[in-house]
Image 1 (cartoon, rainbow, N blue to C red):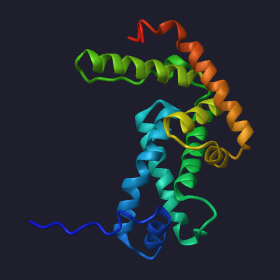
Image 2 (tube, one colour; image 1 turned 60 degrees about the vertical axis):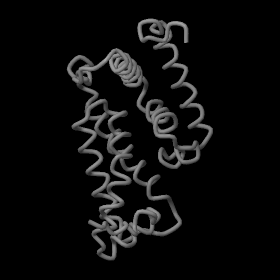
Image 3 (cartoon, rainbow, N blue to C red; image 1 turned 90 degrees about the vertical axis):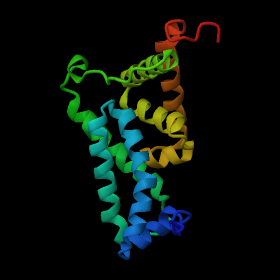
Image 4 (cartoon, rainbow, N blue to C red; image 1 turned 180 degrees about the horizontal axis):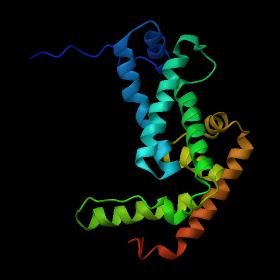
Length: 194
């Protein structure tokens, strides 16, 4: 059976948002497939909780749909706007959590059984997650956006509402803290002679 090519897959985020505002449901589908994973990954890395991250991603996308009709072209990239909303929502949840101890919050679990490499990768991811969660909120946010989501410093500055120098400082301090937290675990995490 012949499949019709997806004409919207090459459209910009902004063009898709405009089409959605005009009632195009297919544009909403394409934009959701493209952007919802970004919001989810950011929230997951900031919160350390998959269920909460799903809630944040859904809320961020809902807010995007609500803003579609009044979107002002050229003011911000749609993805940058979504990162900012997801960051703010995750930060709000972190603030509400402050009364909860680390033990009560629990650790994310990886239930997949697998070969040695998968286990090592899972241990490394868990160690990074634990080290990330120990960072102050703003440092964690800057490190996640820069090194895990790949945003540039000016984009991060826009998301976080800070100057580029402040972002650079937060990122550098966060990286140093992560390096210090993980320094004694190289062999345990399978880096041995790397």
